[in-house]
Image (cartoon, rainbow over all chains, first blue to last red; front, side, top):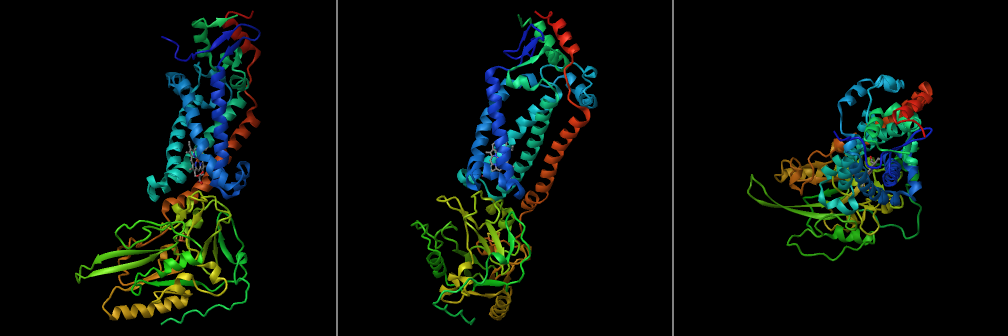
Amino acid sequence: MTAYDVEPGDQIHAGHPVTVDRYTKSARINHWITATCLVLLALSGLSLFHPSLFFLTGLFGGGQPTRIIHPWIGVLLFFSFSGLFIRFWRANLWRREDGTWLAQLRDVLAANDDKLPEVGKYNAGQKTVFWGMSFLIVVLIASGLVIWDQYFAAYTTIDQKRLAVLIHALAAVVIICVWIVHVYAAIWVRGTVSAMTRGRVTGGWAWRHHRKWLRELVGGRQTRS
Amino acid sequence: MFPPLPNPPVQPMPAKFGEQDLVRRSASNVAPPARQLTQMAKLIDTSKCIGCKACQAACLEWNDLREEVGFNHGVLDNPLDLTPSSLTVMRFSEWINPETQNLEWLIRKDGCMHCADPGCLKACPAPGAIVQYSNGIVDFDHDKCIGCGYCIKGCPFNIPRISKVDNKAYKCTLCSDRVAVGQGPACAKACPTQAIVFGTKEEMKQHAEDRIKDLKSRGFVNAGLYDPPGVGGTHVMYVLHHADKPEIYANLPKDPRISPIVEVWKGVTKYAGMVAIGAFAAVGFLHHLISGPNRVSDEDEQNAERLTGGGS
Ligand code: HEM
Ligand code: SF4
């Protein structure tokens, strides 16, 4: 079986500690463009979502500029995320151990990593975030285009726009919650952020959290000294 | 006949109402105003309208707007729809009365209804871009409008239009500037048949009642007043010869109300959404506080070194 979990560029480097390459430079750039877009979209969107947050339009130069720029950032996000999707979807396919891992969420939250099944490059939580984001971004772009009145007002009825704006607002709330989970997990599980900043993690991190991935890398002898 | 409003004095006078009379302000809370202005209303009597479009011309004139030169579409409606400049349009419908087989020519002056419960204002995300005065006038403040088009989704009558030039929403103001100095709307002033009259809402209802009595005596048994309760009543009302069938007047909605989708979007979604986002952030914070960070141990590193064939 080819190790579906190992992505191009994943590689072990001997040393104290062992380090493991997890993300290529282009994957990281792709990720941070997407992340910036998502944060800007959340801020500009929330400013229109609730009156108490309207002041956030100040970040974008006022109400009109916020209204103009938000959908364009959305388009950029869509393409940028598509890049991430193409890179990461295979490693995010659901595996048998993922159900077990999820069922033991209690141990996950208690940091009892030794009691959890060994998982590949992504655990069930990360996979849920991945598929959740993928689905929600499709919903957001679709509903977003329907309410993008400046260019697309003529293509839908007012009733369709009403439904679209409700769906857009709901999907936005959910994706922001998913984003909070995503960022929190990266902070809570120490040693994770370096994967997206410098592109590598320590061997101990991989052993503790993604042992199957590490084993596959060893098995594939993707080791360099 | 309803006595027309007197001409204004020529010397300038202060506005009779303003900021201090707001009962609603979009995306904001307002303190209840100290005084209640008399509720005003415009009454449009479809049975008296001759379709001359003096009101349309007067509206453009007073508001200093120019409509684009259009096309002859073979119908009298011109322009075919409301636009950012044409804040009112005459809508002409040919209707064959099934009872009499008579062709009836129904003419309705379309425009903002100045709802007591305005959907546009409810939907608007920009603080103060839509306001409602205690006399019933719903007005747009273009300096604050961000052009998002939410008012269009909120309005049950499909009234506001966004300008392609400045990306702001436009609709009938009920000539709030004229009313502020004791005048009636320009359209009412221009109407040659008094199909449009303006006064207090009570006076207008009274006048409508006389008109309806007259229409009934002429055989329009379903004549009635259009003051739809679904939006709390309106400050632009119609006398209809067939009040049981408002749809025949170019799709005037029978029982307009703010769409339930808009109510959900602007109601529970806002609160539940803010609570959900806050709760996720709080749970993360608490979890970290209670369980501390999930750190990689030295043992983990040693295990990794062993698995990968040791350090250097
Ligand atoms: C993916 C492409 C997207 C498009 C084309 C899009 C488009 C729009 C449009 C047209 C609006 C109406 C206001 C305006 O015209 O600016 C809007 C509102 C909004 N958007 Fe987006 N958007 C997208 C993605 C997102 C994302 C990823 C988020 C959240 C992170 C988001 C959150 C919001 C929110 C909260 C609102 C306000 C909804 C309300 O007022 O209830 N949008 N979006
Ligand atoms: S008719 Fe439409 S634009 Fe006019 S007050 Fe009612 S909701 Fe607002």
